[in-house]
Image (cartoon, rainbow, N blue to C red; front, side, top):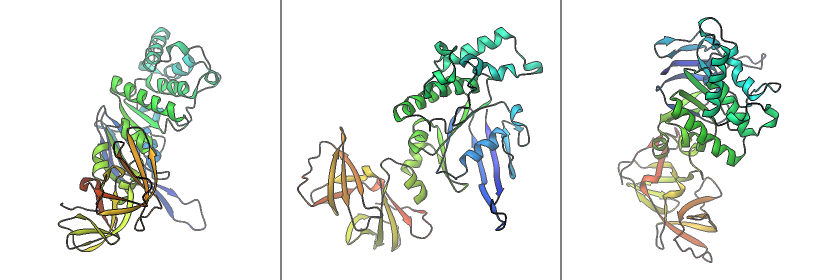
Length: 366
């Protein structure tokens, strides 16, 4: 089911009644969620991603704009009539019901032509329980399950109605690190097997990038960039997107361009053809550094962290925004930790320039 959002806007009244004013949670959001794809809405807390999800679900009405499921305008359709499955951050399972009863609950509330026989409901519940691999837990209560198992029950309950669209609101935030990894892989598997159009809300960029077909990066209710995860990582349109995506985070420096050369501090670190002379913000991915004995970029060596196949070189530079610079290099590199300095050359495709004022990307040729 294709989902189309047209100029979607949500405005809340200010909580400070004396001051008045309004809070724009989502601002003119236009985007088509492709049929059968998993799309991640990504951004920091307060960026409007959950509000967007709740408008798609029908739990909140937009202030402006429209929502289409296929060719059907569902903007003012009630949530129960949209054919959506919704999984909340806190699972929202009924504690007094068994796993089977929790999964059956949406089916038992169907009316009219959609109503099913008892056996058909039991068969459907078992089918989705097998899909999420909890069919051996059907007689347990939620308090007898682990966090990951409870999450699977919540997903099964959302899937049992065979929804047109599956909506997941930060479904992994209550799980520990290992379980998060395992559960996000399960969500991806389930989505691929069912082919249900899925919207996945998260503030964790690693989650979004690992399982999404496309991601939508948001800031203060405004869409910043839309695309495939790797494309956005490789080509951020502005400084916010560049800083938000990536672990370890991108390294940011104050720089300047003079005569087609990029300077960080007093050092000329790269040729950047086609860029006018100006002060710039320079952002370099951690993997964008090459250790080089006579490299053009000098940093003060702080530490070397061995991570197995890679090594993280921790250093400092007076032009850096952060007190710590992290450079990821191959573990085959031999680093003399007794030296005070470390020198690098830079990989041009891992270096991004941004306008100092607007923070928009400045493109260059090497």
